[in-house]
Length: 218
Length: 218
DNA sequence: GTGATGGATTAGACACGTCTAAAGATCATC
DNA sequence: GATGATCTTTAGACGTGTCTAATCCATCAC
Image 1 (cartoon, rainbow over the protein chains, first blue to last red):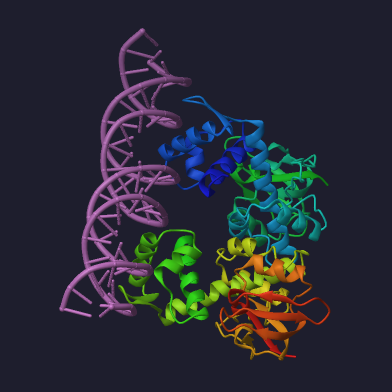
Image 2: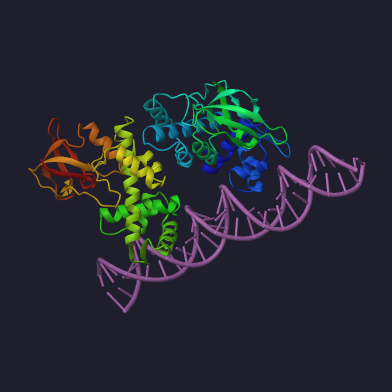
């Protein structure tokens, strides 16, 4: 049995490894709004429990057990988000915090029943894939907006779930999952780009933002 | 903001006061599977937060604030139980533990949406009343089976929610919410009674059991 | 009243997760 | 390969919630 804090750390590691190639102690700390020293302690603990390998000063890698556990957390998180949006009428940009709490209710039967109830969805309201019972993910062939070039016409497939601010920003520009947009220009000096929603005015997004936007060719 | 443990203690106090006239430290401890000394500490803390009055060696009484908070916990607990049974197909005797966890996700919007989604039910699957948004309870005019006399024909209205064992016992005898039964005999020396389900064989229940069975005239 | 009894409280300890401050590694740059 | 910047870890402390053991209190039988 993992404590809530252990689960939070495990999920942060998983998310950072998904995102980039490494999970830095300070990034984990920042994500969990805690301090690096606390993270070190926790990594040691998770390593002892066999959920990850911790090479001091070098980094951290999930074990199969750790990855599996993280995937179950992600599964629960995204199923709850889907439930909150589809059945309780919440907006996709206001469910993250709630799901963050609900995901810690660990009960396989509950999770599976919820999954059935929702029709075994493959993607959550943010467009992110929902791992199945076995932790398998049905991937989409999407790419980061930050890797796209001027002139490309794209559709938004997913938005990194941890950034509610980004969701609201997009919403205010009339963009949501499935919306179409065109890349007008990419500025080499800072990686920012100008994009134009199909039915709206062009605006500029920072590299930070485009990095978190998953798109597919329209 | 209350911690999970504070909420658990508050709810235990509320439940015991509902049940009998007083909430003994040792009974709270037993209910929470903890020790009396731990409970004393917690009562002190809850008293400082203005949720209850703690008269050392004498007892404990909820303040309006404490009662209100407890009612919200009960509300959430019973709404989740209703959801689990009605929408996810759980049995009424297996939802208690899960609801015990879900109730701690405190978010008014979520609670109200769930309430709406379920059709603002007045009673949960155990037959217990669900407090509304304002903490108001729609009472049934039920009485404890333990107070009934031989010859009375009754219908089961509710079963104390904290005793899953009782639920299974009843189920095995063919009894559930709404089932009809007749009191055949009451044994004065130990308070036990013989009851006969409408469509089933008579059996005997202890005072402990009959105390937790809410019935109404059939 | 006096004692016995049983519940309640206090005192002191401990595990856990967090923090700050200090020390240890790594790496880019000169 | 020394230096400084930055990140990581360690050492030691603290708050919280729990425990055990000892003490305190109310009550009931006599």
